[in-house]
Length: 308
Ligand SMILES: NC(=O)c1ccc[n+]([C@@H]2O[C@H](COP(=O)([O-])OP(=O)(O)OC[C@H]3O[C@@H](n4cnc5c(N)ncnc54)[C@H](O)[C@@H]3O)[C@@H](O)[C@H]2O)c1
Image (cartoon, rainbow, N blue to C red; front, side, top):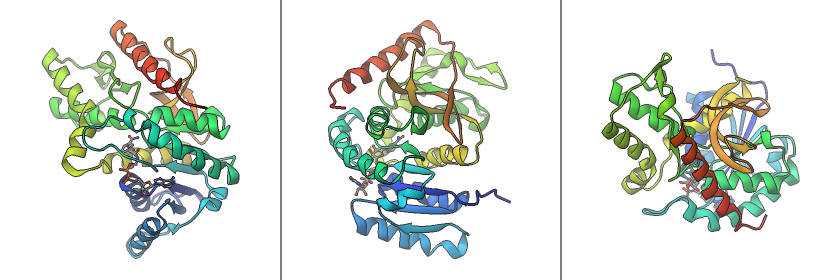
């Protein structure tokens, strides 16, 4: 039987491809008790809520409705998936100007009603917008989390699993840094049951390029990515609400971490009821360290142009 917390409310802001699929995933998992959908396009949120509510006879006890910001008052977790998404050929950084603007009003509306919950950011560029959320909300660092490189790491594990013919759940492998073009594959730590994995140069190049370019490929093919990001967000939400202490590559504020400070990046972190409880120290190879610091510098130079 699934353990459902007695009263756990998740609010999703932005009910497009990512937000609506995340809502549907949470509904199927039945790990939360209340789910609220908010969108600038009220009709869209209403339609999604109605459609999902009609599935309740087949699922179970989640109470779900299209709401407004006052519903954030009792929220344990507020997911932000609102804003522009990549068009074919656009990078995530290309979205910064458009999405940083809408975060002003979204964060203001959240903090009007909630100062105790956890804000989980999915909108791209997710690392920079998590930093923006931290600064604008005044929330403590542990309670502002970005989905980070959890999805990228899942793609990496899937592709390594395909290469080695091993179930991806048994592959331990991490992508760290930006959720985007400067992300860093940690080949030195990839393992199965503690046994290091060997790859030749061509395999490394193919696996990493397919990982890094996955979103471009999917967006070209079907216009948006939705299922795997929804499962990744569900994973983070459940780890928080069930106080799991799972290690997830979420985006979090780094301080004196492998020479990097004052920027949000995806790194393995312990996630529990407090949010990000602890960032795990990593022993990076020389090349990995250089790439990680370059990823941080890239994002810091973008942040420097923002008014925060
Ligand atoms: N973090 C990740 O790993 C990851 C993965 C996939 C997509 N994304 C990002 O998630 C975001 C959403 O992607 P999508 O494909 O769902 O886009 P979408 O266009 O399908 O949906 C966006 C929704 O946001 C709503 N919206 C816009 N401005 C709003 C506002 N001010 N307040 C409330 N709602 C507002 C729109 O009405 C729309 O319904 C994009 O930035 C995308 O790049 C992140």
